[in-house]
Length: 133
Image (cartoon, rainbow, N blue to C red):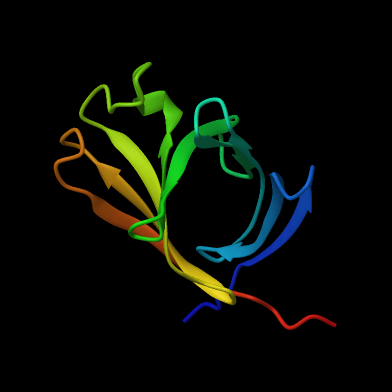
């Protein structure tokens, strides 16, 4: 079995309103690297993200929000959303952050092919805070 341990390094700027993420490690046995820039937009009440990685293609734009009742963050790939933030066709991708604690959280990447009626989990990660030092 391959060691698929991926790592991220987060830094914050602008009063912790801007998050930089450097994501790296093996994925399917190949080197993988990604950069993310995420910022809260108080005008829309949404978090906006720009993501780029070593896979083919360009930047991906994401839009999401945190639900205080469920303590869950859900973000959607913007290319699948209409101007009102609703899924505009059958296909879409989303990311979900949940089980959030001071020392970690769960993350999953999901896809739908029926306009969001059902979702299929494609990828999961367990984030754990590394010991400082």
